[in-house]
Image 1 (cartoon, rainbow, N blue to C red):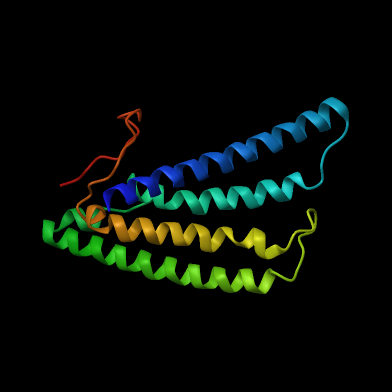
Image 2 (image 1 turned 120 degrees about the horizontal axis):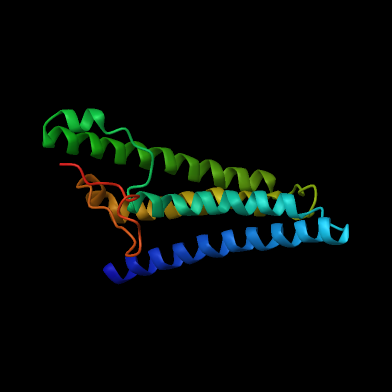
Amino acid sequence: MARAETMLVVLNRALVALVLAAVFAIVFVNVVGRYGFGQSFAWVEEAARHLMILGAFSGAGLALREGRLVAITTLQSAGSPAFGRALRWLAVLIMFVFMATMFWLGVEFVRFGWNKETMSTGMPRGVAYLSIPIGCGLFLLHLALFAARFVREDFEFLADADPEQTPKKTA
């Protein structure tokens, strides 16, 4: 199981990196084309927007693992450790319900948009909308594998991360 989880994290990081690199590349080429040669591609703005949405949704599970999701911990830190753990389990439940609902609605959105075309690229809107169920599905996988460690606040940190920028574990 640990090997499959490690592979999920590695592949998820690669997906996010590739998506963001693609956004950078197409926007850079379009800016150079526009200002250097007076020619730009109409589809770049739309493609960059859809890719950024995919990157954000796909990176949410990784942010969960690294303790980088926005959190207000005042209430859970004010009470006993058992109270804090109970609140974190409640947060896991709320995240699961929210992302499972988003996954289901995302699938419905893909089905709804599959017969419609995007303005610039002409591809089915359902393809662009796939970022919602893909990202939410990845988040749910991360949550299922990481929930107990999330509750213990046993977050993963990249080896080269700046210690001043990484979240601190609270008691």
